[in-house]
Length: 213
Image (cartoon, rainbow, N blue to C red; front, side):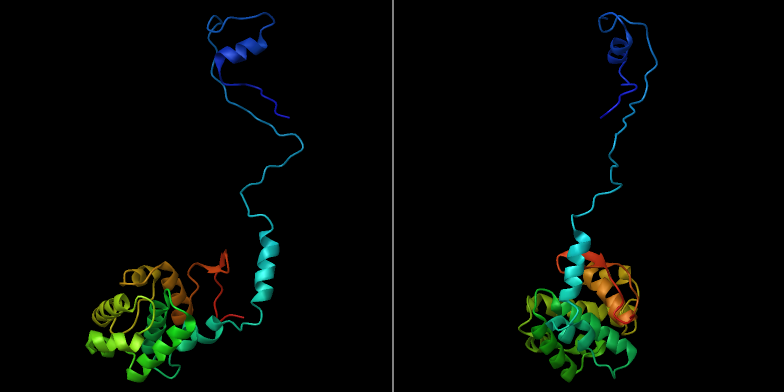
């Protein structure tokens, strides 16, 4: 039940308080008040939450507990050369993420293996011609566009970061072909820093570092 103590409208307030009918606009001037609403027997939630989100998240965690999806075996954290120098390893993580857009993990992994066999470093990608680079990454989705982005990004990394990648989300999203999702994943996999949120199935949840139990 809603109890209205003061409507804030002079005509209605005076009409409710007067024992006799009152014509709107004929009562003495009154100070405008505030509307106060009380809810009996019901606590309004502080913020909206999806129904049964906790239960659904539990189902997702159970489904993913085996870690046997292609992304677990061939994702960006599995594609880089673990024996390469740190800056090369981080660059290969970024390249893998750039190639992965609109592409199956199996295709991305195979493309990065070919790049690694050729030499997946900033200097090599800057110096390789577009046709050869296209042949190495084909058939990833939108491979022609990704050739352009890889070349442009590698030039920037060579010039501004000495062959390494940026260690901030802001620096990463400045690179051609790198969006916020890629930037946050690169921060986690390449720099071991949790920097934001990510999608887990059809639910948005906090990103947890892959290197933290």
